[in-house]
Length: 171
Image (cartoon, rainbow, N blue to C red; front, side, top):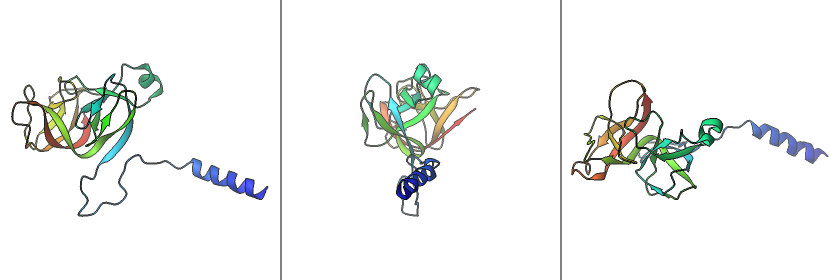
């Protein structure tokens, strides 16, 4: 009986613990890409891959009523539902869990032919599916973060990669 009570007490003690999802615990001067990630559910209807910009699926009742973490590729410029960027090196099949970067440096696909960006400027979602672009102005808009380096995103090709410090903010 004591053992049962001890196990029950441990379960109760552990039930109030909040687990951080993808937060680095130790960062020092040599840490590469200190990112915060979140596990989400791909509700796109197709595979999403690293560098894709995703938004919360606000049209899905499972998201809007129960707050399940469903994401889709963003197709709205300066989308107020921007969620983050699919983490580097990942491929996420439809209806599966995957990791997105919500804070920190990440390689992001850019809509370079229609919405080019430059380093040290704010970037956001673009109207090109899953791509980022130059952030617009105005109310009810959100930005993805700041462009750090744009070594490949200057050739006019959609999907070119840029390094962005992801830090989602909204007006």
